[in-house]
Image (cartoon, rainbow, N blue to C red; front, side):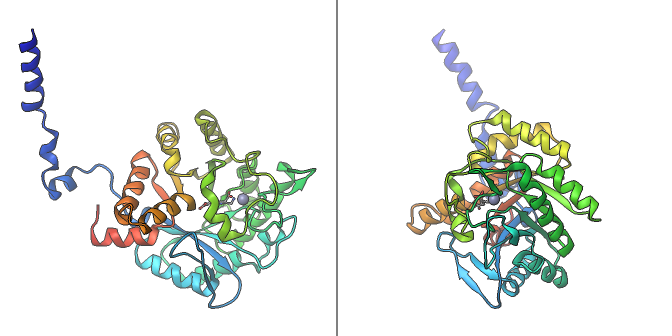
Amino acid sequence: MGRVAATSARIGTVGAQRPRRLRRTAALRSLVRSTRLSAGQLVMPLFVVSGHDRSEPIRSLPGHARLSVDRAVAQARELAQLGVGGVLLFGIPDRKDAEGSGASDPAGPVPSALRALKEAGLPLVVAADVCLCEYTTHGHCGVIHEGEVDNDATLPLLAEAAVAYAEAGADIVGPSGMMDGQVAELRAALDGAGHAGVAIMAYSSKAASALYGPFREAAGSTPAFGDRRGYQMDYANAREAMREMELDVREGADILMVKPAVTSLDLLVRAQKRFDLPLAAYQVSGEVAMLEAAAERGWIDRKAAALETLTAIVRAGAGIVITYLAADAARWLQEDPR
Ligand code: PBG
Ligand code: ZN
């Protein structure tokens, strides 16, 4: 009995099944690789400020800076040359107020950058994040009434910002505030203003995450009181994430997004089975900061770790990856396509 079991086990491994056959050479591994990355699926976030020839490095995101419009256009030109698929714009205004009115100022950094990018005619998609937190003195994603973020009072302000970005030339607007009904509100406002062709990338399943720290440092958008758990999702809830996506589909979203990326891989797998819209994942600032910090200490190999995380995000189901590593990844893929 023991002998029989040992023999069949040996046939199992030594006979037909030797997975290592296809791992022998780089050429074989490349032939059978089932997830491929390409620069065209990557989107680079850019932080835009006022002024000219301004580049203020972001301490916790090495290689990234707050850029004036001219510098942002130069950066976008380089990204286009690398074959990167798009840029996602965030604005940091000179002055903030309680209502975040700077978000819809046509003279603000984002509309200015959008107009300049349109003028430049680069072969990449230009998307603009739509939220109030970069523009409010209190750093919350909506207006405050009686100590709480007022969902319905925030919606028209988000819509106004989205229309301003569409007017300035955005291909895509991405509402990231996690207000209920924000996608429907934006769709109606865009259509009403003659921008039926502007797409909505919904931050559908955006978790209240500890991984947004470097972004908030860059944008000066750390909440002055409380936190965002009253509107961003509890990262523990997968079924609720599906419900958020379902609502966004019904409200008219064109692209669904999950965020952060590596902590939402299961959500991508589920979403892929359930929805037919393009899926995006946002590899957020803290995910990249962890990688950068460890690489800087020589604890991990930066390029290898970066490509591994990006590949895992695509393997899980994202067709679009928003990542601060877009430029480096595009360069690596040029040298060594995978
Ligand atoms: C604004 C917004 C945030 C991010 C994208 N849009 C910050 C937040 O919710 O506090 C995070 C992106 C990142 O960390 O890279 N609503
Ligand atoms: Zn926000």
